[in-house]
Amino acid sequence: IIGLAGGILGLILTRCIGGVGRGWLFRIGIVLSFLAFLLYYFIDAHSPHAVLALAGGWLIMSLGRNLSGISNAIFADLWHRAPQAGLILLHATNSIGKVVAPLLALIVGVSLTSNAAVYGVIWLILALSVFTWPRKALEHLHEVERLQHIESRKTRSVLRTPLFWMVSIQFALIAGSEAGVTSTLPAFIEQHREPLLGLSARDWSQVVLVTMLLGIVAGRFAAFRLSQRINERGIIKICLACMAAVIPAVWLRWSVIYLPCFFILGITFSATWPAFFALASRFYSNDKTILSVAAGVCTLGGVNGFILLSSFVGNNADNLPWAVIISVAGMAIFAICLLLLHTRIRGAIDHT
Image (cartoon, rainbow, N blue to C red; front, side):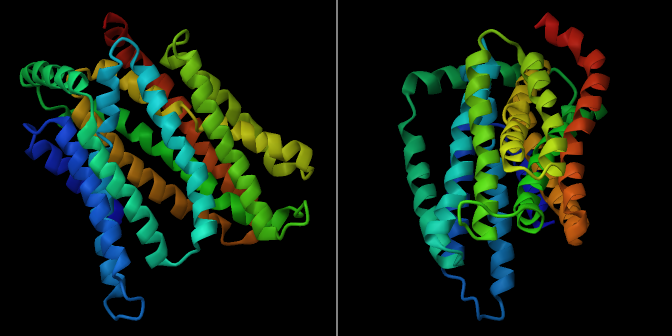
């Protein structure tokens, strides 16, 4: 709930300070995230106010993350001739962190203070690095923002249109589905699969999780290569076809089958989000900034909602296979919604 509140606050701030360029919104988001980790560093776990401090840090970090999500609009405009390529490249680079983060947690440990120190340094470096962006790219973005601002003032606020929220809620399904599987998969492997390679049940579950995350990484870089020849719809169709791998991954117990299947399942979550954002940004070409933040809000809601749902189902160890399947079902719902939205936005997108 606190994470979602941070996202909504980011949406309100973005709307209220519309004159601020995307570059500065991104920088503000990065700095807020750094401040959140700084707060975590000083939390005393034995203090009676530790939970309040943790909640405050989570609110600040959620707000910062949502503002820094403006990078989707930035990359869509920098790669304006092929926005799907720029967006998939952005998310392909981000996906490396999906693999590095759990490995880093294994090295550093689960202490809040030690984790805050490591990630705080990473965010500080990121906050300083954004001031080195190429001047030519920034000048291009400023000109694009100026023209889009002029055009967007001629139309009614997109926040008041049901279609805008129908589009935005799809990001909740995509991101939530991935989060539900990622949060449930280790418990499923520990409870329902025998560990291999002499590893403990917990370590083997992490191996399987990293295998699925590698599928996300491989899928995004492959989609980036394909994005020069295949449009957004084609990339989404390829990703959605891979969700069928969840059936053999969950119900077959042989590692030679379920490991490759979880890798293929990772491809389902690889390029769907950025490809759909590129598709939506063609329709809302003058409202990419607000679309980025709205997508971030829905992503936060979807992630937290699906984790809650999959955890509720998976609290009974016998139901863990169904928790994984129910999470993947979010992508199936997205596929149905995409068909319903297709006729609404196809004409306008093809015209652009």
